[in-house]
Amino acid sequence: MKTQVCIIGGGPSGLMLSQLLDLKGIDTIVLERQSREYVLGRIRAGVLEHGFADLMREAQCGARMDMEGEIHEGFFIAHDGEMTRVDLHKHSGGNSVMVYGQTELTRDLYEARDKMNSKVIHNVEDVKLHNVKSDESPYVSYRAGDEIIRIDCDYIIGADGFHGVSRKTIPGDVLREYEKVYPFGWLGVLSRTKPVSPELIYAKHERGFALCSLRSQVLSRYYIQVPLTDTVEDWSDEDFWAELKRRLPDEVAERLETGPSIEKSIAPLRSFVAEPMRYGNLFLAGDAAHIVPPTGARGLNSAASDIYYLYHAMVDHYLNNDDQGLDVYSQKALARVWKAQRFSWWMTNMLHRYPDSIDYDQRLQQIEMEYLFSSDAAMASLAENYTGLPF
Ligand code: APR
Ligand code: PHB
Image (cartoon, rainbow, N blue to C red; front, side, top):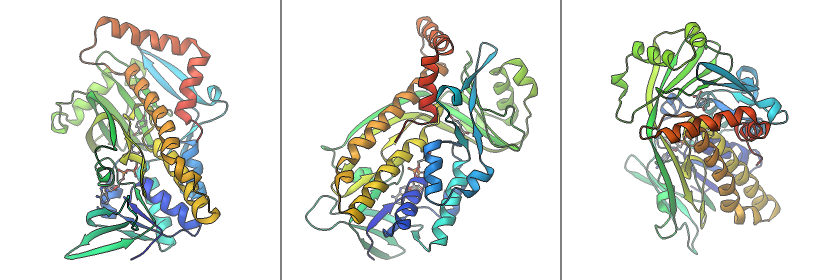
């Protein structure tokens, strides 16, 4: 097989780039290790910054998001039994976020790819990248049953997530990895209940952080901070709801509607960045190159700018004979990636209970929040980061 851009990974990053390039007449093939059902069965976060929502519209995939998604102009921070609202709209100069499940968004991207008869190949095994930095043209190989298939291409996009193969192709003396693993995880529960609040609640509590989020007016998503040693089996639904209530202000806990969990999982919290994001004819995008803890809702939104820069760089290369975008991709993408890292780290530090924290740390956490609530400049910084820094 032959294509212009071979994309490894059929998650939101890979699908979005493939859709955008296809609309400009640039040929792509997407290789995905899992089945489509498996990819669409993963429960992921649900807050999109406005830049990502715009990209969905540009990809002609925004119709259902605009119909079913909710525009949120603020969220609450619960602390010391009180709720303080962060007015994103006011403090960001009119921006907002879109609450729309990433699982739904991925479904929309697959449907759009189907409509354009795109080549998204599932269940590929042993994906290998060849001639990534060589005078010979790059190609990708994979195994389907007993057969080894070869795809010749101009460029390879590594959009295969944190555990993918692409990043590992970059030699150790070139690749630099920065990682921070937090000493706790998030236990998440999805339930068919009415959300406790129309806007998200981020709760700081001495027993640990909690988050009240939603997917729709009949589907709620809640999280609590748990020790890394906990397993899902340690938490019955009953225990989960009881602990969540303890961490919320009384008036919120009283109106919390509980019900059976339809999904329950624990995710460890991690910050990670790989540099550079380009090696020869390989370009990394999304979780393949960087991970953030979920506190600032930046996961997919960090991937959005990678896709935006790559999309424009590829269009300039193929349609305008201009390689500048490709040449500066790594530098430009990393500049924004690191800002999202800083913001996610800051939100995580302000709101979580660290097992080894001393009184001094806890006082500083309190002061950080007091300063935030007393300063328009600090609120503006939060709001511009949460709604998304410019691409
Ligand atoms: N070959 C082919 N596909 C692979 C391989 C491989 N060797 N390894 C992984 N994949 C696939 C995975 O099965 C997955 O579907 O690559 C895809 C990567 O998708 P994601 O992990 O969703 O990453 P990305 O598309 O960059 O999306 C970023 O996902 O994890 C969240 O917080 C993150 O919201 C962010 C978003
Ligand atoms: C979610 O709805 O899953 C969600 C929302 C906001 C976050 C993290 C996760 O910061």
